[in-house]
Amino acid sequence: MSAVIKALTVIAETNRSAIKNDVWIFSSYIVEELQKEQWLKMDKEFLNQLLKNLAKACEKKCASMPIE
Image: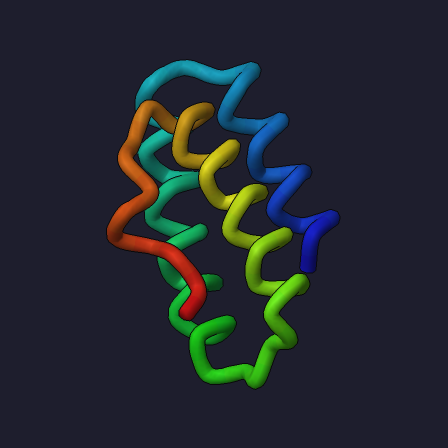
């Protein structure tokens, strides 16, 4: 999962605003499914950091997407 989030981050970093928005929408879809999993504390922290990086690349705020 981390590789997917990292790849989406690279895509967002290297594309225009419309693509960043599409990446963000798709990421929200992925996170919705990730919320259903039972993650260990360190895994959640790691994935949430990756999501923060992705949010920054997409020029969005991550507060709406953390894995809890």
